[in-house]
Amino acid sequence: MRSSYPIRLSIPRLTQLAACLAAALALGAPASAETESAGTSAAARVLDGAASAAIRHDGVLQLLARKTTATPNAARARDSRQPAAIHPVTSCADDGSAGTLRLVALTANTGDTIDLSALTCGTITLQTGTIHVDVDDLAFQGPPAGSPPLTIDGNNADRVFFHGGVGTLDLQDLTVSHGYYTADHGFGGCIYSNGSVVLTRTTVTSCTAVGTSLAVGGGVVAHNNLVLSSSALTGNLVSVTVGTPGSVVAEAGGGVAVYAFTMLDSTVSGNTVQAAAGKSYGGGVMGFTGFTAKYSTITDNQALASGIGVDYGIGGGLVGQDSVFIQNCTIDHNHADGGGGLFLLGSPPGVANIRNSTISSNTANLLAGGVLANTDLNLSNSTIAFNEAGPSGGGGLFAQGADSELESSIIADNTPSGTDAAADLDGSTTITGANNLIKISGLPVPPDTITLDPLLRPLAYNGGLTRTHALVPDSPAIDTGNNVLDVDYDQRGIGYPRVSGSQADIGAFEFGDRIFADGLD
Image (cartoon, rainbow, N blue to C red; front, side, top):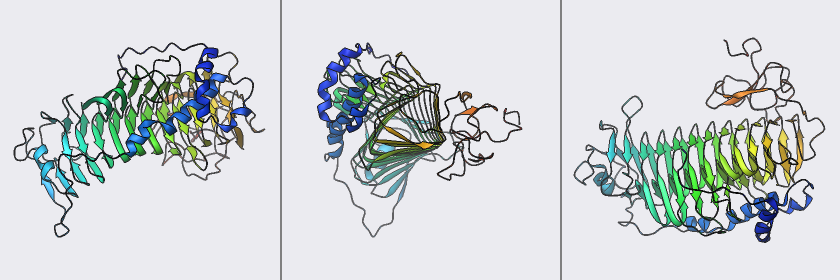
């Protein structure tokens, strides 16, 4: 989804940009910044340092930590003498009458299940505002696979769910759409939870959170954890209509803003954060204390800001902090001013781990088209390619943690617009590891690093759950990598061995069957 909100992305000249952001360095620029090469711009340093400090100290984190206590009714504890109950919803109306979703949810006890699986109407359109869940734990079960799908539609009038309990709101086999929440601090367009949220085979789509000065979580806000399993967050929007120029943060998490986020076999796509003034973080995901993703895709999200002074959009697809683990995933076609694909930050002992994954075709107006890493980084058996950065460099990876271990990974075919900026790898980190292919680096790399063209095919479904860049038969990446983590399969998963020749290939894709490598099997 591309927003029509009028955002200006005019970027000041680098000298002006550095001057505007210099004060932010006092908030805690990376200690390793002083070791940067002369070719690394001051703009790159301050953008990265400002982003790191801002995320750590901003008011959004404090607000998320502060639980909302006002709920429509006091939370009801389950009588231990009674087993959990299943309450069927028998009506598609929303007038509060018997059998309606609104009444059934209101009368349920913690631990119960709301069963919507027998409904055949297709959509429940809310007429009188949010469905309030004022117990700790409550599950909503939609129609099973093979049945007509069911959507709970907020009618663009209010949130769809407000969860006042501190347990888990569990949604299965449903679509939640067209929630709309607006306030000075607009939190959670479709779902707001004081506790945790679990989405299983569920889509949250076309939801909007609008704030005058601050907005967070276009699709979902959860004070604790969000687990996304075989689910999707698509086409959601966070928008700040006024904001404050130079503010630490105006908005975060176009799809979701949570303390800790886990996604498995899921998609975050087409979400947007945009601010008239102030900074924007995490077009798709904002995870404040942890992010884990496996066999998932983050694509076509964007973090937009005015681009004036210190107001930037950072982390087009994802912002992950402290503990980040990404495996067998594709992050592609996201956009921001810095960290077009993802922005990773943290402090020791926190480390970001990226394994068997592809980061491709992301763009940044200024810095780090693919990955902006302000934390120690472990990158293994992955491909970072065809990303594009602006004049501050780091087309593929801009790393500023103390240490970056790269193993059997491709960083190539990325593009900067600055003439003296390294196209593929840049920053101030110390690079260790072996068996990598890095075409152009602004940093010293291990002596066995290959600098040839990896000969990658376009991003496509080559098997498995996520897209990859296949290797052509004469790629120098074939049989020149390693498998130091001893994983069984490449990014595509079961059926695609990590080692099929004399040794592993470099990158996320293993060339595999030499006879049928052209796909004509």
